[in-house]
Image 1 (tube, rainbow, N blue to C red):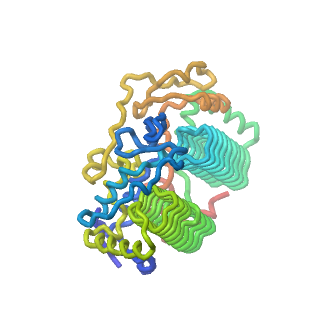
Image 2: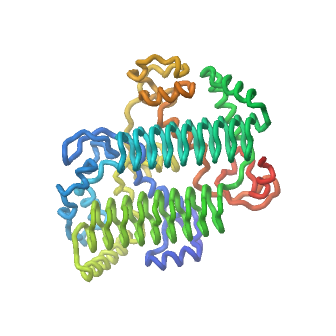
Image 3: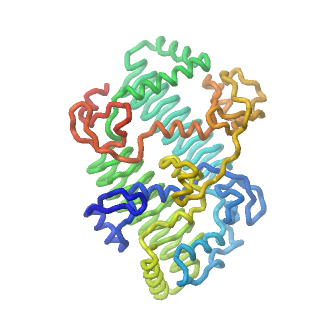
Amino acid sequence: MNKVCKNCGGKFILSEKEKIFYAKLDVPSPTRCPDCRMQRRYAFRNERALYQRKCDGTGKNIISIYSPDKPFKAYENDYWWSNKWDPMEFGRDFDFSKTFAENFRDLQIKVPRLYSMVINSVNCEYTNMTGDNKNCYLLFASENDEDCYYGKLAQTCKDCIDCSYIYNSELLYECINCLKCYHCLFSKDLSDSSDCYFCADLKACSNCLFSWGLRNKQNCIFNKQKTKEEFEAEIKKIFSSPDSAEGAKKEFEKMLKNRIVKYAELLKCEECTGDYLKNCKRVHESFDVINGWDCAYLTDACDPKDTHDSSFIYYKPELCYETMSTLQLYNVQFTTYCYYCANLQYCDHCYHSKHCFGCVGLKRGEYCIFNKEYSEKDYKELRSRIIEHMKRTGEWGEFFPINLSPFCYNETVAIDYYPLTRLEALKSGYSWKESEPASAGGKHVPSILATAAPDNIINEIFSCESCGKKIKFIPQEIKFYKHQNLSLPQICFECRYQARHNLRTERKLYNRTCQKCGAAINTAYNPNSPEKVYCEKCYLEVVE
């Protein structure tokens, strides 16, 4: 069935499987295309924008994802979970003279919110969407890490800096998509490898430089076998000065563009389309999903089942639709930041709750509507009345409208995947956070090896060579740079993050043909990308 997106005007297809899914949940089919649905969800997730403000409960200084100029109350973790306040105190009747969004916005502003999402962590004040970490700084969407800094999606890692999507690894620097790796620098798509530099797509390799597509190799440079002594001499030469290290980065960029790539990273998958999928069956147009069954249009998901159009969802979500940033949900739709819940619709920041509609900040609610508790019978009757009202206003079946997002567009992950200028965002109905002025005329980071940096460099404030924002080093990173004989980074954390982000494939699929055999492939590599894209059969013929 062909449909036209009411947001962008583009055409999209509604499959028979999707129709069955919507009928099972008793929700209408989407009016927006998958891209526009994803962009709208992403605009509700702030990962990396942190602000100093006061806790509205205790008055203490806190680091929060809600800037002081936002209309929301933010409580520090201990106070939010305490019995010193009750989210049910904010309960109210639904006003049928207003839209659902108008009712919800009023409740959303009144109910205090968790200052950020940091759970069971030690010395991790400047992190968000994290849990069970120790001594981490500017680390986001990560768990079970120690001494990790400036990264995203690090899971069970130690002593890693400036990395994204790394798992069970140690001593990594500027790495992306790495699993079970040790002491690797400036590399991507590695597994079970160690002491690799400026490499891509290696498995069970060690002591490799400027290499790609290798399996079970050691002491290779540009995919050619070398002696251990030759390898070590070349590494020593590269990291002998900032200029030679910078030259190596440019050589790496050149290598990435000229290599052959497999059309998609699908491991132990059946009937799947997308990229970075593992142990999945019948997962359609999804990205970074593990152990998924019968799902579509997902991103960053773990153990999902029978779930569509959801992002950053973990711990066995099932029968979910249009959800974002959640843990362990069952039969939940149109909901954000809810954890360990079942049978929810249009809820925000609810925990250990079930059978709730239009609620905010509940801790253990049941049969609640707008934070007010009802009998099961009255709950079902009122819920049905509100849904009929939402059908008349055109709100039923749609995710939250963008004016309900607690964040400005450029504070959210939407800016990473759907970049807009300030004017474009405002024209599309998003809000925009004016950034701090660049450090005009500020001094840049000296181009030196960290071993040559003076001890007082941690007291200095520098200016990013790319965007002009401030750079301030912390003692832990200087110690790491010195130990690894690295140069001091010249650009700020956010610019380094964006550079890594740009090395990953898009979260969009293209119909192309294998550049060797001509077979049809569905790939996240844009037709304009410089790499040679092969089908799996042809790719396996070239890896060594």
